[in-house]
Image 1 (cartoon, rainbow, N blue to C red):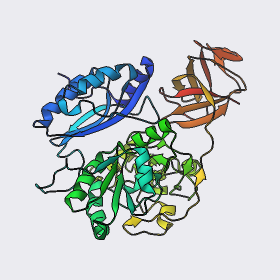
Image 2 (cartoon, one colour):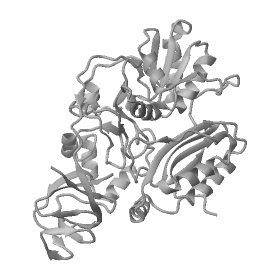
Image 3 (cartoon, rainbow, N blue to C red):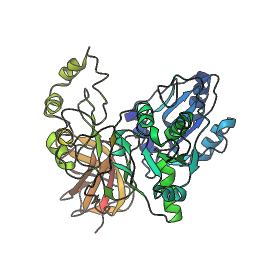
Image 4 (spheres, rainbow, N blue to C red):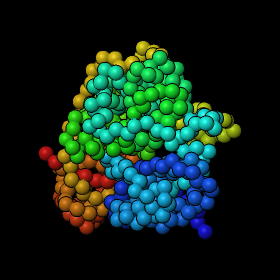
Length: 451
């Protein structure tokens, strides 16, 4: 009985590309009393593995928290698989704003003590005694009420690239840190103010609203379905988006653009930027914001030290990591002494106040059409090979090669081989090759830029 992954992420990416199916990225959660989380976990893995579900799912005695992707044509079969359980019948499935076939490359279902770590040890706390849910229109209206305090229940690295106007953004690394801090800071407003909260998909606010009611706050509200559902309703109903910037997401995309506003800055030089990345040094992986200029200059690293490390032979890099407890060093989120610009910013207290700043509009999206996918890379001559699946390309065209590791690279085709012969044009079904100043991966997509 297979209860765990048997394929690597690289193998799975190739399978996804070969299958050619559109995938949906979605998330959901539910608080419920689950008597045997391990059995529940195994049942989910068996049901979802056969449906080609990939993602990161946590289950606990208090419920389920899931972020995943699946082939679009398996959506209703997946819905049936969760509605076998009474507490998930009719559950809202938050569909991602932007779709990416490679958002998840493994199916991981883990049993945890809690689906949202809160640090609470209080048997009198009832997680189901929640605040009032608000839809997008109601949320916008309450934002304008002078007696409202709106709090971002996400972590600092999430809120810095996008947030609601007028929101208080706790400068915290984890959800569990924010609960006692917010309670202390707002303790004098338990009766006279309306506490309005939001998060990515609603799961943290669900627990937070119950917590603050438990602590005596009388007027507690939360954004139903979080930023993801808010964005859907804003588009469907033609409302003004009070959320500006990007919504941080926990897959390789690290963000979905909600509006064209760029509200954050490169952590290394201070240029307007809202693109998160992980340091490419395997022994670091610091999450930080890096602009294209710094990415090129620093080779995707957070510091000169990490640049030095990535140029060492692989065995030396492994030797540096071996035997060292890197738990507090690897995968840290946006706070490090090496981030030069971020460290020069004015320091804040517990709450990061909304201060005047220049909001930069993102450049309009490049118009492009899909052409095909990468099939091979020849490292010595630095030549990429592509299968043309749709449309055509010819010498003189500007093309865009896009991938999760490659990023977005534009070049002009000056010469190419089509089916091993020098040709001016390649059409659907052809295999073409041309020189590239960078490496491509098998999962990379090829587009032609339109004028």
